[in-house]
Length: 89
Length: 481
Image (cartoon, rainbow over all chains, first blue to last red; front, side, top):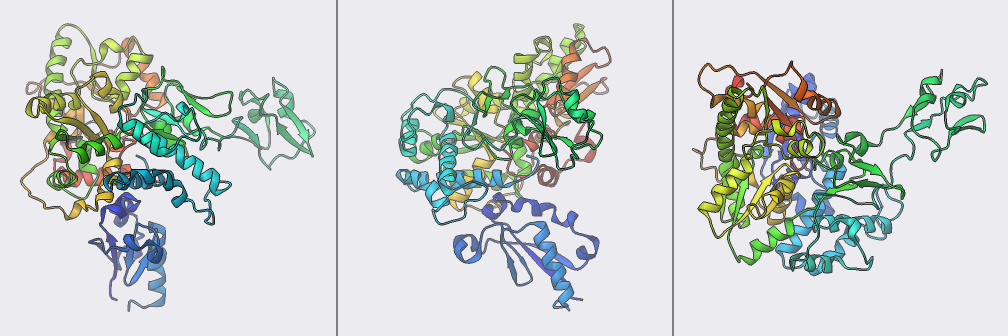
């Protein structure tokens, strides 16, 4: 099975506006998710400059899906969906 | 800070907008902020209507401009006027925390309320046990008259269905010294004589109705004006704020416009050395207990509430003070800005009138970085700048551990760490002057976990601790004594 990539925006804006919680995301992932996920940081892609289009920070990308106002619950739900779809096979 | 929540995020959003306007020389648009954030047709989250929401935002901005919200005399005064007056040196009076009274209305009038578990029983133990006759039966259920209720809790103990619940008032519960109380107007008020500026009420209030009075516009004004250079003194807790080394933080601060950046950890080394010496002398003179003095909320607690404890507080100045004295020598022309996780440092700075010009929080630093579009993680990491071991002052236990390193090798070092000024620990401190079981150095931190968990921190305590341990590579056993 291919790993699911989770990219966390490392920009200051995302970090200050709630993204700091992702620093401990790895520790809070359920075991079965932890095994299929690769966590990465990303240089700010600038979604925060177009909030009308992309929503509010913090931003996290799970594979090619962009999550706005991201939090651990949303990320876990998104990963679980991807695992169910089998789209990461 | 325990956890980032929406009240924190709102404050940061406002701070960022304020910083942007200052940097863009656009302050005359400050009165637009509430309208932009709460358009008439938008959804007014958690408030009755956008108009009230805007009114509250206006008062929040007043606090960010450094005013006490209660000092408002003219409701029509524009925020722009407030800002101009502040910048022209108008005396805003003094106080660290202010209650945004418009935002404060979410709490119960009485701590006890009847839940829907009430069966309206015949015995009515609650009514019988109430000493004030505050309980009546209305439509087959008990009802507590909140004006008559004195909060004794007898009804709760009496109810066999556990139908009466205790509803806390978070700010009052969090205050270790009873400084915040509901006034006759139904709003909370802070008694300046009692307040020790720990900021616990601010963190506790679910409505974000308590704010610190920011000095950020003065810092920004000086940065823009460049009448004199500004030096940033950065508290050790910075190591828990960003996924970045100190050299990256330094580079970001220089980009913002500070002319020099110093680590308060250097001052902490001086505090540790002198406190070790002080302890050796005082202990030799027969004093069995000495407490640390670096936490300003704790020192205020001793000064204002525990007069018997005051003589046991170390006379050694705090790391901030040592760092500021050194910076004054090194940069005699400069303005000095302390940047840290603490709101009580404002009060400490005031005690040393003129030594420290401004106190800024890490949260304000974060807002400023956003406004300037600076990503700390992208700043150059000119490694080689190894954090001093005294950086551990930021973590509970770290002060005692640092003091120990300056004691003669093998010296006995009895010590206790008081982690957080909750009511239980305040009660313990009260007994300290007569407590025969406690000897040695008593480290006191107002915030659970130490400065890393300060109310002005950017990161939640869990993140701060993780980043801190990554950024400050000390062997595990050197974190605490």
